Amino acid sequence: MKIKLNTRPFNGLHGRLTVPGDKSISHRGLMLGAISSGQTVLKHFLTADDCLSTLNALRSLGVPITRQGTTVTVTGRERHGLTAATVPLDMGNAGTATRLLTGLLAGQPFDSTLVGDPSLSQRPMARVSEPLATMGAAIELTAGHLPLTIHGRPLHATNVQMTVASAQVKSALILAALSADGPSTIVEKLPTRDHTERLLRVFGGQLETAADGRTITVQPHPQLVGQTLTVPGDLSSAAFFMAAASIVPGSRIRLERVGLNPTRSGFLTVLKRMGGDVSVERLTNPGEPLGNVEIAFSTLKPIRLTAKDVPAVIDELPLVALLAATADGISVISGAEELRVKETDRIATIVTELSKLGVQITEQPDGFVIDGRPAWQLQTPNFDSHGDHRIGMMMAIAALRLSTPTTLSGAEAINISYPGFFADLQRLLPSGEAVS
Ligand code: S3P
Image (cartoon, rainbow, N blue to C red; front, top):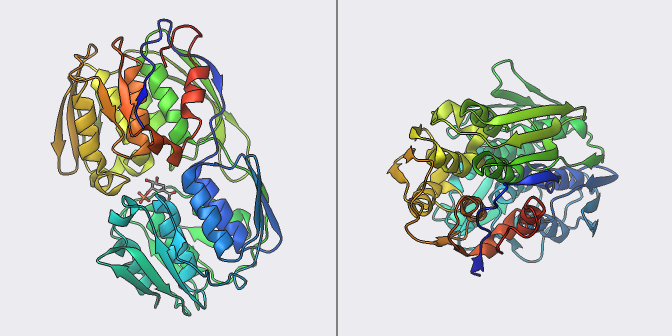
């Protein structure tokens, strides 16, 4: 689907907004609810395609789930009450759901097959099947990819050293470790988002994270009890508007009840380091930190990021590239080779799309070098999501700095994480100024 984009709002973006619920937490809330006793109620659940793939997969595994608007109720089946699906589980585009469910199902006493869309079917799955094999899991891949078949069986405790910095892989191991025959230890390559650990504790799981922040010991066979939770706003969605307000002159916006988990909120740190006008008001919330964030336009400086900075900002790196495209001078993003195995090869798609703005951006094996400039020279007004929700939204934000009409192809990909994105953007644009 090709759409016309909003171009430069004369007075910038203004107003306040609560973005939809966090994608990572919505997936995990469903899965933990499914293996707990009693009911789990998730308020402000993300009703986007990715999380609906998880919801439907769990229903196919015999978990009763109802949804009213953004409130989802899961009737927990405990760890032993899931049943074999009669059809392959269709994971759509959802990498997180696929990796986490693989871990969850590895120790179940039945087989499961997971399939996905063409993009998900190209993403690497050995990163999850190989460490799970150290627990005795039997997972058959198709040349390293989906379709994958899990031959569920009893699992052993493990002590595993991860070779990729991935919260998805870590979470798969934690979920599998719940069914093991003793405590398991997982050592991360670098600390990654810890939503699984936090949420599992809230449901009654027992696990410890060592002082190094990357060694996790999981006790098996916990008694998990259903919870009522409100999912914080997704920082990765809010980040699009934070970027917009930072690069469109005259802007000042406030994003309310946004998740501020420190393993996840690297974008705010990066924006501040680039000279962004950011103020954060923290609110009290059990489990996941959240708060209100105010952002105003400012002239940004270039930035250098290396591997240690990457996990906390992995999904926002397209936006960091966009910010850097407006900053006068050279920005260097390195140690970000994980971008190559996201919904698209994001190093390639970021370079292709930002080059259209007349910005000098050079692809590197593990990132990119951007020679930013405050005034862009638009080369082509037709942008493309390449089927990747975050690339599509990044270019919709880029368009806000342009006065020439622009279009976006593949706009439907945005439904993967943010079906209401354009409606929310419209709320921040003064009426009468936008072309849509
Ligand atoms: C996620 C982890 C990240 C991130 C993805 C969501 C999660 O992937 O890119 O969008 O919810 O665990 P990796 O853990 O593979 O880096």
